[in-house]
Image (cartoon, rainbow, N blue to C red; front, side, top):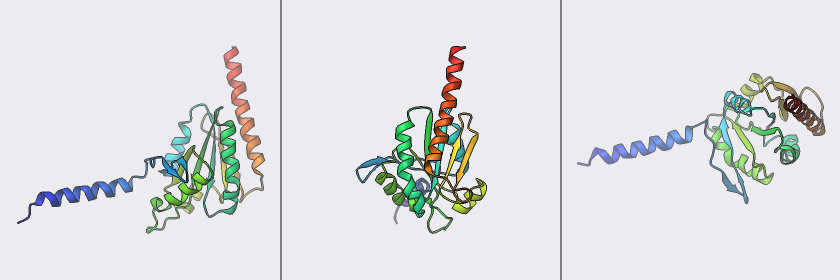
Length: 196
């Protein structure tokens, strides 16, 4: 008769492996993908809002995008360049991928490879999130019409401006101007407070 211990150990290993793949609030380890080290964490919209709120004192720009959106893909390099140019100032940039659409056979983890490859191709080495909420549920919850959308938050974590292509025509240069204006206001307040 075979011992029950190897079977229990096998079940434990299987359970731990399954539980680790189901973890939604953990960052994927940084990976070298196409020669670039990138990472993406899978979060719900609620947890993404908490992440935004933890950017204490910084202006936050969130790029809401999908790999299937031609405009998202076309504008993405400009977002990455903005992050490189201003990211050391009072700006935090977060990419929020919304490829997951709620199909049970294609959970968020299904999209990680495709998203990482896109991020690597664009050298997006900053804070990258893969949304665990289905796209339509998220769009409704966040009152967003479509992708791409840019969400600009003030240093207090409150939404300053929403650039939603389904509701208004805008160029990415307008997003940049709004970001620079918000950063300038933060810098001015800090300088005034320091001189008092």
